[in-house]
Image (tube, rainbow, N blue to C red; front, side):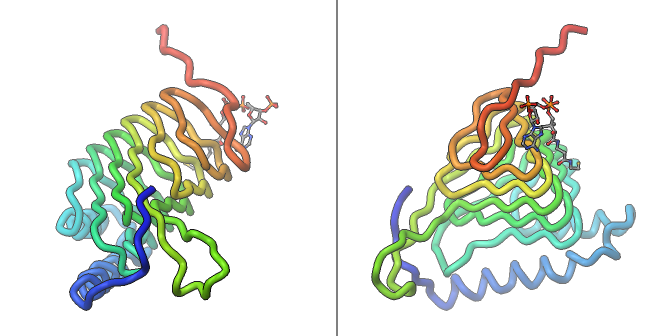
Length: 188
Ligand SMILES: CC(C)(COP(=O)(O)OP(=O)(O)OC[C@H]1O[C@@H](n2cnc3c(N)ncnc32)[C@H](O)[C@@H]1OP(=O)(O)O)[C@@H](O)C(=O)NCCC(=O)NCCS
């Protein structure tokens, strides 16, 4: 993780505020109805590079907190991001093709470095995260800032707190998330 102090220029804060405002405007449950759902998808495509087939539920928020500079979010094809998902992409987040992210998932790519100083002087550590093609994050999953990769086809069970990388086709669950199985090869 790279460390940086908390700071942000007016331009950084203004563009962040605008992206959050757009998301609040298109985030209402009314837009969950199929024809209107396209409007939400369009708004997100204007703000972030997204592949075709993206579906985003109500109440999602993709943000860069604390005025952190840099960080980008890319979303692949046919991704499904369910209701009330929050993604902090301050460290950079790449979401692959055919990824499902279920309700109430929280993804962090920054963390605060605890010290005995007042909190506004604490340093922030951030780093990039890749969620590879075909992965599925179950409902209420939390992904912490030190995680760099959730592997291809991996499954994170509902309610897990992910503190380390997850390998390809692994199924992990619990707090902290541990290996509970693996996705079997399809022999049919
Ligand atoms: C992970 C999941 C897909 C099941 O995978 P699975 O390989 O079939 O797992 P099993 O049910 O055979 O359970 C294997 C072990 O993992 C444990 N386990 C299953 N789900 C778990 C969870 N969410 N958290 C912790 N442990 C879990 C089981 O208790 C079992 O443990 P044991 O071997 O000690 O008895 C499912 O439990 C899950 O979490 N699905 C997500 C559902 C969801 O979020 N839906 C959102 C709407 S789309």
